[in-house]
Figure (cartoon, rainbow, N blue to C red):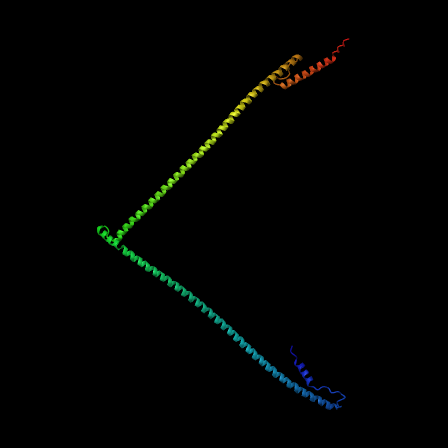
Length: 309
């Protein structure tokens, strides 16, 4: 924190002023002389303060100038740093562009080298093709002479290409006929295969039908056996039913006869229908019970025989 100028001058004045002399060591002076002495001391102090103030101002001006110089140098250094940074950036950019150009040139060089290799290979291939065609030409030269002789014998052909075109047409026709023949053979083979598959399927179907027929015959025989068993059981049931019916008829006739005998004994007309066998048996039962009760009463009423002497 900066010290105020008044405080600074006051402290400096106190340092310049002489220390107080003990009263016992100072001779008493008149007040006027003492006042003059004090004024002189104040003037000296003011001069000293003024001198120190000028020195301080000079020092402050020097320091201000020094600060301005330092700020100027700082600005210059900042400018130098900025220029150096820009220089480094420009240098890095130029270096990057140079590296990219070098990479592109290397890539182009490799491409040109690859293209040159491809062209050399293509040239070598063309040379081999030329040599092959030359050998073929030498090999076909007798054929050309033969075709010339054939043209002399065939006046309908004027040039060799016409003869070759006719031959190519015949060859194409022969190839088409062979292809058609192969197709017909393939279709025939396919038809034979389908026929064989149909025969196999028919044979399998016949076998399956035979198996189903055998199964149906077995089921028919089993059904016939079951029918015979049920018919025999039905006949047995009918015979048993006939016997039961005959027995029932006899039983009903016997019950009716007993009922009629009971009615005759009681001398009462029949009050029940002929088909009411249960009612008839009930009446017979009641009659038998009454008769049994009467017989029991008679036995009780008979005297006991006397004992022999």
